[in-house]
Picture 1 (tube, helix red, strand yellow):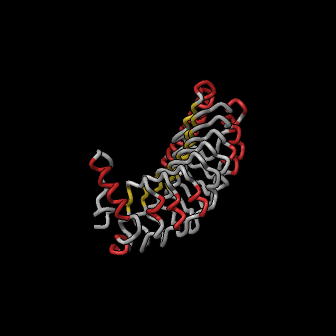
Picture 2 (tube, one colour):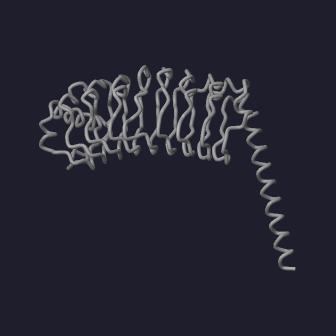
Length: 272
């Protein structure tokens, strides 16, 4: 009797699981269908292991926003190139080890979130001429950051924190519109002097790395820099004070604070 009862319970559980999966699948298809008129596809937390084919057909070409975060996606198909109208794409909190080359063909993309994955490489991104915000923290893009940033003339915010990066790519210094750059919790031992060419940079966070100094030319070109975070680095403080342009930076920071701007302890960069 006991065994028969146990089998019956297991059968009911299996049947209930199947019904739940059917409901979930139906819900996903309904959301895809609705997105063709709302131009917004939100499949967050939908237990996806792959993208449904219905989300990739020609009728989704006019999507503006696609949210696929908090699923179990291991790959994105090249068929996402169908989404030629998409402006915001979030694939954060999945199991992705790479992004498809088709990402680079989404020419209207303005925001790309792919943080909290397992990315070890990046496709060429030079075609994303309208991309403004790129969030890639908490991946595995080190030890050498992929050199894929050429031609990204609109990019203003990049987060590459927590990626085990030891060396930055040359093309990152070519992103002249960059306003905010987050590189905290990596393994950087030095910054390239070419970062000093980021003339629009306002915020730089390189805390919790292995930096002992900043390049002498860094402050010469970053004349808009107002926030610099260095906490958690073995930096020689006396050498920092003697870095050309550092005192001018502290003056700008203090003026920014008086004018209601962000307060940075300088204790100034979290070092004192």
